[in-house]
Length: 245
Image 1 (cartoon, one colour):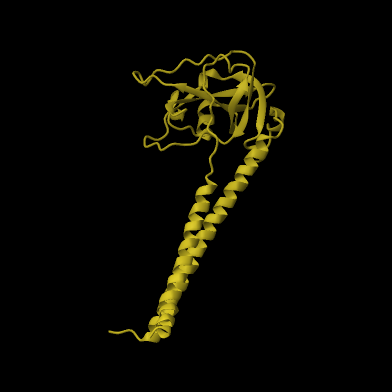
Image 2: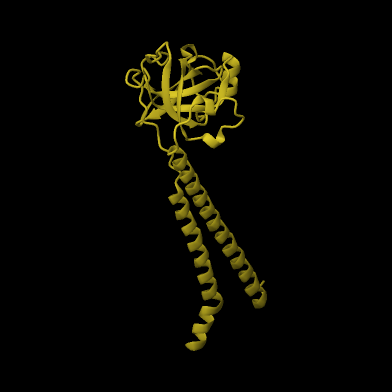
């Protein structure tokens, strides 16, 4: 059954209008994502340029989110017995372990989980732990405040033992009885960095705002294409036909 021409015109117009609105909305959404990533990158850079904090600036505070990515300098003793090796972590494109050791802060009952560095694993004996020399006395740790270690897909669930896929901070605190602060420190320097054999080529966050700008351009281009095609098929062809009978 043939569609009434006026009805067809309005149906096509409505479809084109909705398509333009949707593609413009998606383009603007990608722009807002790019802007938020740029703001986050600027905030991280600003935090990294601040003077290092010490333990007294953090212990007893309810929230530490305002200090994320800021340099910190700590003194304490390693809780070596509770060292954790996070498996399947890469550094310099090589798989291995992230070595995590709690640090008991000097003159405090608080403990900070330190992401000390990366160690190569033994692929012939996957249960063998790499040697990580660790001082028994007071040490100084330089690094930056970060969220707890990122989680990887783990179909086996939470496990105990030194080798783990992931580490839940609250569960680890209950397991060890340590008064863990709710953040970690990514170590970049300190009194042991020359002797512990760990790599610290920590990846720099790549937020990828450029990709969002690219997606926004594609959506805006598609919106413009829809508008051009609509104008041509609804008005342009008729105008050309009238001018060239």
